[in-house]
Amino acid sequence: MAMKNIDARTAADMKKAGALLVDIREPGEYAQMHIPGSQLVSLSHFGMSELPLGPGQAVIFFCAGGNRTAANATRLAEKAGKHEAYVMAGGIGAWRSAGLPVESGGSEAPGGSFFSRLLGR
Image (tube, rainbow, N blue to C red):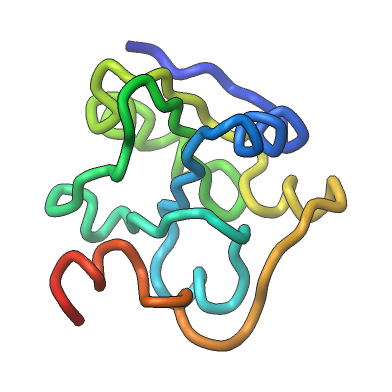
C-alpha cells in the first residue's frame, strides 16, 4: 500500500481525529524535541517493534526533515499493514515551522519510548 504525503497541519488535524503519529528518529533525537503524544518507534529497532494501532486507526510517520521517512517508505508501509499510512512531509521541522506544539528536553518521554516500555527498560 503506497503512503500519501501530507503536510503538518493536516497531520495535526488527523492526530486530533485519532491518527497515531510515529516518530522514526532515534531516542536521543526524540529526547531533544518531539511532538506531544507521538510514539517513538526508531528505525534502528523497527523490525522488533509493533505499532500500537487500534482497528481502523490511521498512522502518520515522520522523522526530522522527511529524508529518512522517504528513504524507508516501503518498510514503513509494510509495518502499517492494512492501516491507512501517511508520511508527514518535512518531518518535525515542518511541524515546528507551522507553529504546532513540540516538547523538548527532559527524558525520552513520559514512561519511556514505546520500545523501552515493550522491553521493560
